[in-house]
Image: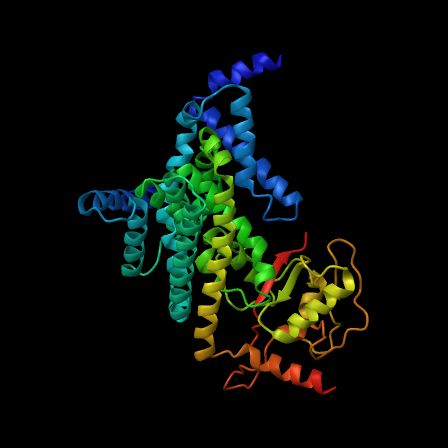
Length: 133
Length: 329
């Protein structure tokens, strides 16, 4: 891992924090940093191999990084115990509603604009053959 | 003995290296358990790891703040990791641009509706304001959800757990909700972790996470046994359902359908090659009576569409239907 790619990430994050602090944008520093890095990558047409491998390595272990935060549920366990019903209902219910609405919208869009590789054309033909037999 | 061990651990837990090692080991245990459960979404490594650590902290009477002095090093990396998300986004910019309309609309609508529904449900059932604030950002990727939660005055730790729970419930609800054609629809209500999983399933090479092609290339890069299940072709899906019906009584959660072993891959595009074997999780059963073509077929060649032909040579593209791929270890 090269130092330069580490510094690139940290500089973007720091710049994000500064922008967040100065402008009061309702986005956290790392998210602004991500947008900055995306702009930077587009300007210099792509990440260096080192940055690519650093990002892959870091994101490969992304879930490990959540563990300390998830352990933070420990002091909040009483809150969970008191309010488990609204939490469970909200988690499951909003997932269903959200996925269904997203699916409907995407379906509607895809129906109006067919993809160049029309994968379903062949499937339709097979289906027609199958039903005629 | 156990008591002295407990004091030993609690004495050293605030040293960064002990907390880091402990967290990492617990996480590897979680990953191992998930592997044993065939990668089930229920056996989430983060949940397993944090449960293990919570049990350890409780039994040794160590407070969270004490543990966080060491584990804060791992937590710190979340910031750079969120920034690093720009790299995979950049890598897939072409793809994102190509389906910008559906992605944008799907995510906007899905995320807004999921967020509104979460707030609505918690409010309606009388949860406290900090719980409402923690649950609102649960449909985005964890590092970003943590940022939002901090921003709007929620409890970031609770948000992490909610995000993971959303991923798990999404993975469980997805199959009953939609029979086919996953893709960008996952984007809104489920977050990157599971999108990443779906991407992993779609890609040709199970080891190459950056290969997120919407087409599954079952070509020379397949050097190991993988399970491959076409998603976009409706006729193939019918075949899949048929196979499921034959191989097990319940067609619900069985994922494995197509498999082609290493020695088979050279003939994948050969029309005369044998039809692939249908397998159940462990015991391989040859799927008899499956027709070579048509909706009930289990023929791998049908993974490759002939609709798109090369304009010069007239040959079929070496690209197959959208597939769900996973290593058949």
